[in-house]
Length: 147
Image 1 (cartoon, rainbow, N blue to C red):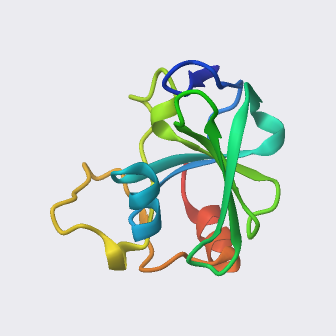
Image 2: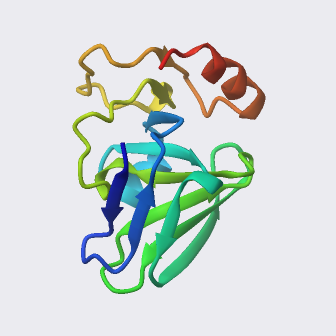
Image 3: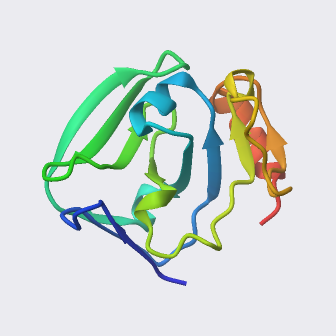
């Protein structure tokens, strides 16, 4: 299935012929501040997804201590996609950027130590991690998750 999406105004376009490697719910304070809400994102290999449109870039240190580079639409300032230095070759796209999101459900939840007490899932989460999960741990755990 081809996935299409964009920022709020349509200035940044997103296209992928592949399904996400995984959909992740992040409960960290940093993601809540960036999104203004709960963060659910799709992870893709950077060769599996295309972006077009002008972006502003914001870089900061994430919970892992590694750099995170976020691309925001220059027009509407929507967070459109981002990269973690700790996961070279991966690009992360907020689930809300995609036009058809109903089939995209998170299987992995990170930073459960910071999860809001009223948040629940419908049973789709297969793995929960109290912190960022660091690269080695995440790679091992991701390989265990079923499609």
